[in-house]
Image (cartoon, rainbow, N blue to C red; front, side, top):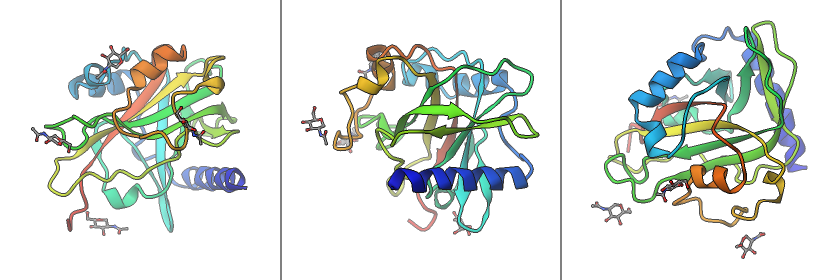
Length: 219
Ligand SMILES: *[C@@H]1O[C@H](CO)[C@@H](O)[C@H](O)[C@H]1NC(C)=O
Ligand SMILES: *[C@@H]1O[C@H](CO)[C@@H](O)[C@H](O)[C@H]1NC(C)=O
Ligand SMILES: *[C@@H]1O[C@H](CO)[C@@H](O)[C@H](O)[C@H]1NC(C)=O
Ligand SMILES: *[C@@H]1O[C@H](CO)[C@@H](O)[C@H](O)[C@H]1NC(C)=O
């Protein structure tokens, strides 16, 4: 039941991203890679990041067009309340084979200066398959199983500098669905997406993006 609601939700998100022009989705893997490198994300997440596909992440809004993520740009926390939808930009490149795993981790908990609780796992899900590309070449990813870790909204502590919330796309391995490291009661703190990828043969990320989110302005 919960899953059905989630699917309906993803479809609604697709429709809204179809209606609104893609104002600021990532448009080049080279630009995304440069943004990751400039922000030191490969080193801090212990990953090799040589993206071959454009992962698009977009936050649906209750009564406004969805807010797409551009690698490295700031997003107000209040725009990140609802689970993001994910897609792959298929224009001009071979359409990758699924299924896929998507992860979202905070590299800067509790603060960028003190990363002792990082990574915080904000989302981890598998069995994502690609839909058909829309007129702009964007194919939505929809999951056919509940997420391993359901989406948790960014919540940096008051006074913190903005955190790097990082989204990574992996090709799903045969062992992923049998993974035993993470379930719904596993602490989301001190996660290591790199170690998880090693343990379950996910390889290097195929793509990714990230956003900066700080505490609410009023806090
Ligand atoms: C870093 O954050 C942890 C967790 O909040 C805290 O226990 C620790 O005292 C902090 N370290 C420093 C040097 O501020
Ligand atoms: C989650 O994993 C822990 C540790 O392996 C285990 O003790 C617990 O029973 C699991 N919980 C669920 C809901 O599967
Ligand atoms: C995370 O995992 C990677 C890959 O196994 C490892 O190299 C790295 O040291 C780990 N990071 C931490 C903080 O344990
Ligand atoms: C979100 O917060 C910003 C300030 O950070 C504020 O200007 C804006 O009105 C808020 N938007 C909504 C939809 O609440």
